[in-house]
Structure formats: structure tokens, C-alpha cells
Length: 328
Ligand code: NDP
Image 1 (cartoon, rainbow, N blue to C red):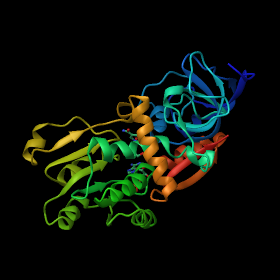
Image 2: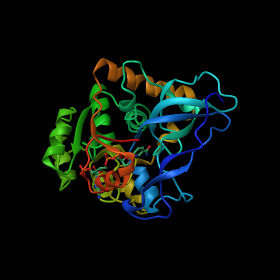
Image 3: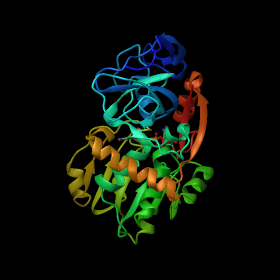
């Protein structure tokens, strides 16, 4: 440990499951880095849909709870046994604990060094949605030039990044989005066809000579799942990676047989960043693409952490595009 560690700091906390109003900003004891961890002074926290599931009780958490696993900032203290990281390093991570705060702890192994030319706050937009987009098209399915893929919520945080990555891999991308403004953003990200949700399975068939797409990336879940299955070609893959409209209820596996020997998978980032090497590979490719100008980070909004409730409400009411950042 190197600096005088803060004893208290300001953080967002939730005392019980509920709505966005339950997110409060107050002075609380500051976290201390444990073995293998570092303490980071927060430059920005990334807002992610999972925090709405944790806030509302869809996912179990222990209360009082400070949300946030994505953030960027400057390392201010090292826990026992940390090597290869120095106080003063500029870092970002998708594996922090309680990043909706002035400081957060994170495992040293899951820190991404932020390139010098990149603004530290902007760097908070990369780790979680960026590495998710990366694993979805590089590992869950290895997308290539022969593929046509359908991506739901094409103007969202994951959606905009995944669209650009799939296009750069040579795939033809079809997306959905709920408003004309969002559809225009999705086109700018490289989508060849941008659809409304209404009747999307039929439109996908028309656009693919009746065949269907090779892959559907579905983070919307409950409202889109059935029609996503109907949009696939024979032996196509449905990648269900979230449920912004609600969780998909249990379903009969025989449907996969009847619909053309389909595949369904339900991946999550933690299983695709299992080692420091894997995390570094994904982050390295993302930072390179950003530096080369082939991957555009769209920061759709930035709010003070003290107004995290407003940001949650906007995300749940479908008012956001791209990445939303929260700053101390
Ligand atoms: P987004 O920025 O994509 O926001 C969610 C979007 O979902 C909305 O903007 C909206 O776009 C769409 N949507 C459709 N129906 C609804 C609804 N009923 N309520 C709210 N939104 C709806 O969020 P993220 O990029 O942060 O996350 C996208 C998905 O990816 C989420 O489901 C999230 O949980 C998941 N995720 C999964 C990960 C994993 O590893 N499995 C990691 C990271 C995220 P529109 O208005 O165009 O419909």
C-alpha cells in the first residue's frame, strides 16, 4: 500500500430492491484493496443493463449494495501481492466492484491499461460492452464474410459496437431499433438493413431470399425470442445474451428440431474473460480498432454519479443510445 487511503468517500447505494429512486449518493466507508486487488480513483463508471436487474431484484445481490462493475480511473493503492501495476497507472476494467463511487476495487489481473492518447473518462465506455461485442462475434460465433447476422437494439451500447465489429469482419448486418433516430444511428454504424421490431422475422426472410440469417444476437429477450428463432436459417444460431424486455421463460427444446436443427446459447462475459491473457487479447483488439478509427465509441450521455437514478430510468425507458457514462 502506498498512498494515504481514503477512509470515507461518496458512493451510490441501494438498500433494497426497487425503482431508480432507490439509488442514493452519500458518504460511506471507502473500500480497501484486498490481496491481488487495486484501489482506483474513479474517472467514470459505465452504465450497463445488468445494474438495472440488480437494482430491481431480478438478480440477487446483498444489501446495502453499490452497483457497477465497469469503470476507469487512476490506481491509488495496491493490495498485497499485486505485481505489474503501479500507483498512478491509468486503467479501465469490466471486473470492478462498486464502480458507482469515487473509488472502487478491482482485481489487478482484470485491469486494462488505457492507451496514452485515450481520454480516461472515455475509456470507461470500452471494457464491458466492448468486450461483450468482441466475444459475441469472435468467440461465441466466429463471424465472417459469408455470414448474415441480425442484431437487436442496434443503436444500444452493445448493438452499435457489435454492428461495427461484424461489418469489419465482412458480415452483412441487419438490425432492429425502436425509433427512426435510433435506426439512423444503426445505419451509420454500418447496418445494411435496419428494421422496426414489428414483423421483423418476415422482413428478415424477405431480405435473405427466404433462407433466414446465420446468427441472431438477441439482448432484448422476452419480446423478441420467438421471432428471433423464426429468423434463423437451417442450423442457424440464436445467441441470447440479455433480456432488456424481460427474461425468456423456459421453452420446449423440440422447437429447435422442428425449426431446422437450430442452436441456442446463453453466454456471458465472465466466461469469455477467464484469464488475464484472454481479457488482454479482447481489449487489445478493441483499443487498436478505436485508435485506427475503425471502431467508433458513441457516448450517448454522461450524468453525475449522484444522478444515477435518472440514468437508470432513461435506460429502462429506452431513451438512451450507445454508451452512458456516470462521473463523480
Ligand atoms: P442497450 O444500450 O442496448 O439498452 C437496451 C436497449 O434494449 C434499449 O435501448 C432498447 O433499444 C432495447 N429494448 C427493447 N425492448 C426493451 C424494453 N422493453 N425495455 C428496455 N429496453 C428495451 O443496453 P446494453 O448495451 O447495456 O445491453 C444490451 C443487452 O445486452 C442487455 O440485455 C444486457 O443485459 C446484455 N448484456 C449482456 C452481456 C453478456 O455478457 N451476456 C454483457 C453486457 C450486456 P430499442 O429502443 O431500439 O428497442
